Image (cartoon, rainbow, N blue to C red; front, side, top):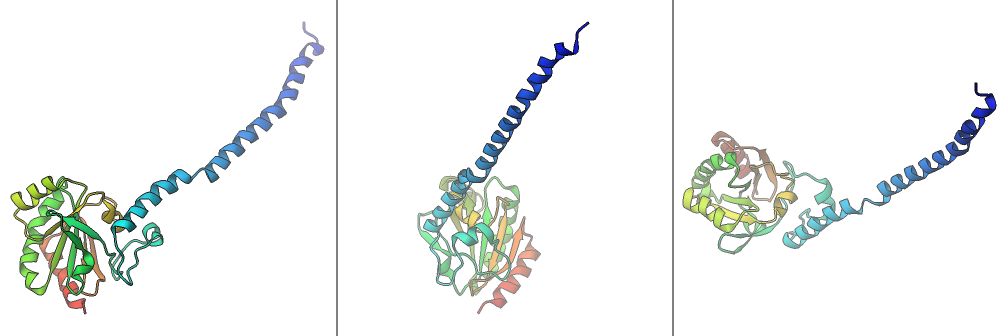
Length: 219
């Protein structure tokens, strides 16, 4: 039979080391908390780098709202002023949204792999043919695909006559808050204000309704 004295070293051992475990636990907990608070630079770098690239690629109009604060917090919606930008077309020409101030514009964000994008293209072409004499501009911003692939689909396969642009890094899509929801379309009136935002495939009646409001509301 063991005596009470036989157990004292075990109990004493536990009392001696328990504070050390607690101190070590608090130390590592504090270290983890400090890393969480002060080690967030990775996230900031990932966000700030594309933002600076956007500002280099997207020249701001006088009175436009392009800026770092807007990029991080604003989401364009009806009634907002459209962000200006400049991209190249299939021939390498620079096309700037500001060039079409005074005319109604449809910005269409799309990709060749997006089946709904393909399905709505004939409806956009029909609207362009109908309203071209009223100054309608359609800028189809392709997302991060090669000029050869875009030309094959846009010109050779579909025979579309409105303007494809190459958003080769997806910067303008990010600027407009598309969030890879393709297709997405922004209707802009002659004053440069957004009259409608449509996420998903457009049908002919929807295009007609949006254009009626867009063409009539500008200037």
